[in-house]
Length: 504
Image 1 (cartoon, rainbow, N blue to C red):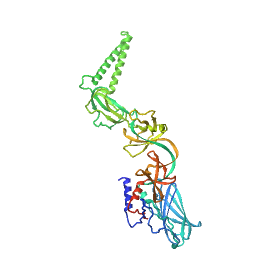
Image 2: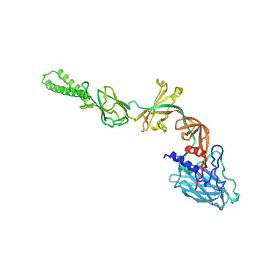
Image 3: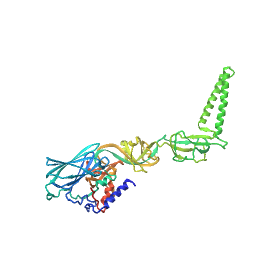
Image 4: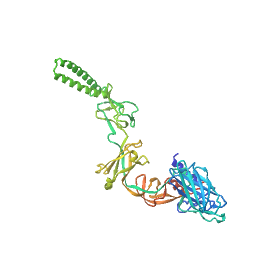
């Protein structure tokens, strides 16, 4: 079962679970409210952040002589997981004078409980200190009112906020969920194009039959896609039984010719010293011996009594296999094609209307048709090779080429969609693609309002490079948006059943 499926199941369970738990009030505007029906209508909650942590705390009204429970939720922003095994303490100051210290109790990872019993009424300042093995953080909650007695409690909480979706910390911690702060970055204008993943020239070679004969396989396991090593024997072309152009006959003839010319050369070598033969005769026999040696040893490298040997010219795999065992091949026939599959050539076909931007292209991302993963050129140690100076003859597009190192996941011959990047432009508000929800060609993003409530906001998109998209309107720098798990919030917002609060 995938993590995404588990996450949806968790949403359904939270949406249809125990009726005895606190419900959330629903609005009629199409999105559920994050307001809770709680024992104290004026229960307060606060959400604070540091570079490392998100703190979400819920607490009842604080009354002198009574115990108020503080439920502190701490989330590690690195992976949006509950912060466990931390030393957490709470300090209550009243009117900048009286200070009380309280120790935490943790029954569930990420949730720390405090029982706060104030001795005096007034304006309170709460400090929560968090210490882990790697860092120490401090949070301050100001303007906390400490009541003299319960009768003084008045509406002091946040109340119901319409248009927001509730998603508890327990839900977020147990699903693939993440929140990031929106900020401005340099971002490139993007040209969208289609293209193909191809082998690099030289990394794909044809094996050609250099003689007529019957093709014999070196192993029965030789099929298209089989891995091969450079120098390994793949085929033997046998001319046995053929009277003409028999490579084995040629091999024997070359060996006999070498033996004859060698004997002649050695005999003339002795006789020239005794001046029985002339120097010109000796040089002639020597040259013939050298020529026959070259012919014989060239054949010997690839020919034996069984026929012509065909070896793999590089390490890779068999891309094409054009002959079967026992089939006749004539000289010049392509027996097979070997591809190394290490270095790949990416071709992006750019429409002609982007001709003026062609010179500005510096980088790209791409997604193969068989995958959901978007690759960057940098992560594959790639580089821009060339940009077209003319329109391709066959498809009327302008090709742009990149070279990348195959990490083992790129499939030769596959089609791909490309996002070609031009020179980066500063000051662009961007979000990860995973943050965007599309509904009938209208785009939305969920923005965190409090620790457990999120507001669905419509946005206008600019360009996209497959990983990030530019936001033209609807968000501001500093907004905290859901970048993983938006589909879970969407499921929670349309559920007809109430979404429940967490238990402590």
